[in-house]
Image (cartoon, rainbow, N blue to C red; front, top):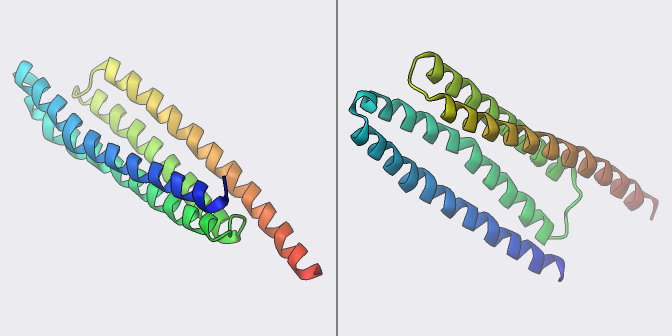
Length: 159
C-alpha cells in the first residue's frame, strides 16, 4: 500500500470518527440524559449542566481530529517527518491532556455537588486515564517525529 492510499484510508477513519462523535454527542448522550431525567425527576435539574459539560468535552476531541487531518494531509504529500507535524502532535498531546483534566475535574465537581453518581465518576475516571495515555503517546510521537525531521534536514543538507 503506497503512502497516498494509506493517507486516504486514514482520512476516511478520521471522517468516520467525526461522524461517530456527532452521533454520540448529538443523539446518544442527549437521549440518555432525557431518559434519565424522565425516570428520575429528582435529577432532572442535572440534565442541562451535564449536557453542556459533555458537549464542551467534545471541542478538544474535534480539534484533535482537525490536527490529525492536517498531519494526514502532510503524509499524503510525503512530508511525514517535519517540524510542523511534530508541533501538531504536540498540540494533540496538549489537547488530550486538557480534555482528560477537564473531564476529571468536571466529574469531580459534579460529584461533590451531588449531581453525579459514583459509578459514573469511576467510568469518567477511566476515560480520563485513556486521555492521559493518548497524551503520553502523542508527546512521544511528537518527540520522535521532531528527531526524524532533524535527521532528514541534516541528510538533505549533506546531499
